[in-house]
Image (cartoon, rainbow, N blue to C red; front, side, top):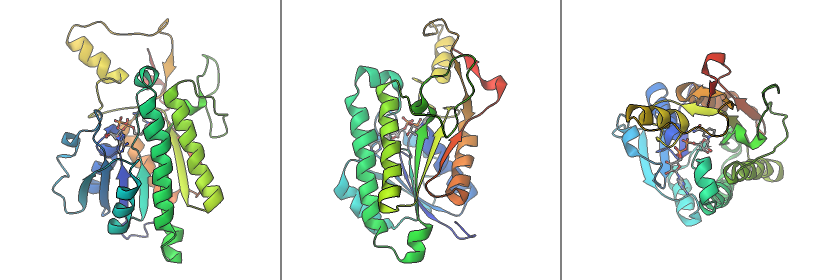
Length: 267
Ligand SMILES: NC(=O)c1ccc[n+]([C@@H]2O[C@H](COP(=O)([O-])OP(=O)(O)OC[C@H]3O[C@@H](n4cnc5c(N)ncnc54)[C@H](O)[C@@H]3O)[C@@H](O)[C@H]2O)c1
């Protein structure tokens, strides 16, 4: 959709792990303008954006995606061509201890963002309306768990979430698809496997294991330790997200995984 022109990309959750990688990619590899909307929870760190913070194509707005009034003003003022929605509560263990924030941000926040987007989108001229994209970045955990011998998930796999986190992401996926089918909002959904890479918060498996090992602390393993996970390098992931924004088919879902045997770790 870029046709060689630049786009204005509103990224939610841009101070998080994947969002910040997305913004570094956009600023360093495209001519696009980036509006980063992030509440800066415990998981949001502007230090991951130091290399782009003074770029004239980048701006940061501290805001909660549950705040409709603020979202309306952001859309009105910045007039984005694309929304990349990455703001979320993202840690499974935290969702088990305290699910409320997951329901609030992942479900109510996504609904609020969809409604603010729809209001703005309805004001656009036909060509801009057609070219507009709302991209929801989600997880393959919506499909549940696989046993040792099962084939990998596909976009046709049934939803079977097993934690408050994955249930809240499943819910937000359904909301995004419903806004496409009901209101024709041009949406895309991507479901990715576990990411790893620079600036990941050390509650997630790979940085947790590395920092615990360096500190001589125990390495926490659930169950019998034979579980398998697909791992995706975050900088490969954001390239895939950019390709999907530009070439993806409206209303489609795309699964994104590493699929490299050497990167399927046992934990
Ligand atoms: N990290 C992974 O391995 C992984 C895997 C699959 C899917 N995902 C999905 O990708 C997206 C990004 O994941 P991540 O790992 O970068 O998450 P993260 O936890 O590192 O970052 C989330 C960001 O969202 C912000 N945020 C939280 N609540 C907000 C709110 N109400 N309003 C505005 N901003 C808010 C936080 O401040 C933070 O900067 C999430 O939707 C997550 O579900 C992540």
